Length: 228
Image (cartoon, rainbow, N blue to C red; front, side, top):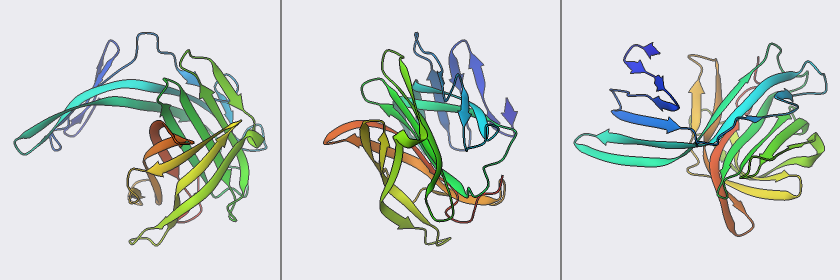
């Protein structure tokens, strides 16, 4: 795949993207026993009270990533874990929904957690869901009432004045995780492409006093109601 000077290529179970401007080399590999994690019911993930308010959805957590970043004459080798998310739908959000909160966390024990909620204009939850997969690949799908998002701390963008709950407590069944951003300012201005502004970025997860994992948080509909 090529877009101007950006390329993406795959060979076997590897993925490589050399980006000349940033001088970035990245290779993502699936673990030998990796299997995609299907969300919802066999990959059919409900997003509202109506049965058609849904998406087909799967994730590939715990991707093994390695590469290098070159800045001027200094080259730094990097490695870690990543998360691939793939979701598609032919219908917009439920009436009354203005946006969503979503998190995907690679857990330190080898498991993975995906949670989300759809919000109304008052910030209440219209619908919620999630999947917890343990290190062996066994997965549990949660009902809407088993998921909870509680804002702990908010950050206001100096550019758009949008306010985001960048620090959250997330409940998934009987477990609760505290999410903290790697940095507060991870706002994305996508008005030139998708027409909206939202927050998405790296977060750390704690469970009690224990470091539980690292992942990604997405907060939409806080600048303006999201239109799909």
